[in-house]
Image (cartoon, rainbow, N blue to C red; front, side):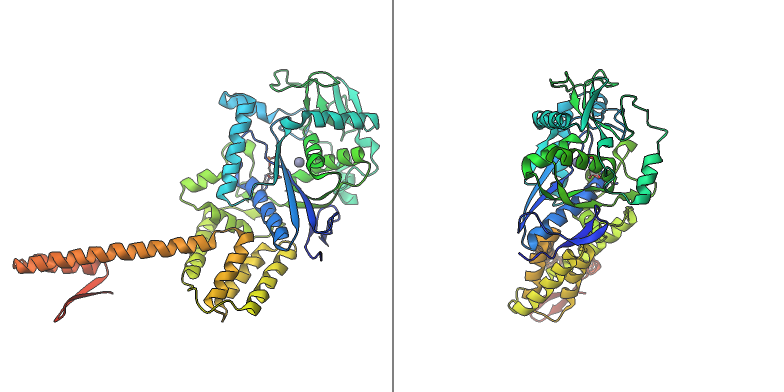
Length: 475
Ligand code: AMP
Ligand code: ZN
């Protein structure tokens, strides 16, 4: 098929046309959540934009297979391999086992995804399912000379690679090489600053809850190995698109490439898609910061989760986005206005095939142009204003919503039903009051009759006595 989808590839630092390894098919991988706590709405910004990417690729005709890992073991709380295990930290906090914590927060994650209309990837694989695959990859890396044993742990030897800092420009590479961070405790087992642990048997944390037997002793995997293994397990030796938030670029994705390409002996993934962060006024949102914003918190304040989805789609994935309740209020008004506008459309006039094709092309072009989701939304506003039949408009909105997933047609239907329910309720109330007033008049209780007339007027209903009986109208 014709390849015309373009996005910014972090690897080449260019907006590029995606040419998949196999014609018409896309092998796509998403770094999944670390399930020691709820996902915050920043994490979910990344997942919303990756969801739109997947749906846009399907919309233009690709057969997409998408894989996501669940980090339920071995993710440390700092970039240094000496950090604290986040899963264990969660278990201690909630007096549960590590596996109970993982299950609870995995379910919570997918429940948030459902509320935001984020599709579940075709394959979802927890890291703890793949320990044998991790061990196999580490064995091969040792055999090939890319890994070494020191102090009871197995390390990847970054010094063996000519181009370890694949994502960085020449200047950045130099800075990364000299920039030793003060807050990171030096691991004296490492041969090079950027070596990282593939398998731990000795760590600072003797109370590690989950451990497995391995050729190097009882222990657990390092942070990065899972994405390489799970990706290769389900997508084969060639991956087309790998996604994540920008914080994943270094060291996580850099280390994934180092391991995978050393293991496979060839290039692994051609296109890297990274979503910029959602920030609040105090800076980047982070799970370890204590209080953080979740979908449930937004719901408890009365916000529709799909309004948050719209908020994300209104901005480009390559720009940082700042969250505030004021902006979310404005987005709520925008969403409601859009839904109201759609609810006023009638199934009339037939579908104009030429107009349909024209707007569909505009919508596709916006998506293919570096996933310009806000431009795609603008096409909806444009077509609603256009001089085309209501039926064409409805058909287009329905078609676009396969990608946008804002439930526009459903919300418009609900609004219509709600207003007709309100009408029916109001009408029976008015008729009841008119009858009550007639009884009052009959009993010569004119004060009560007048009071009923005023009560109705206060509700915007005027009544008139005519020869044919009492008539009412909304004023
Ligand atoms: P984690 O559960 O911490 O492994 O993160 C899950 C995903 O969210 C990763 O792809 C991160 O890069 C991404 N992420 C983390 N913080 C933010 C943020 N503030 N805004 C957008 N994405 C984020
Ligand atoms: Zn990953």
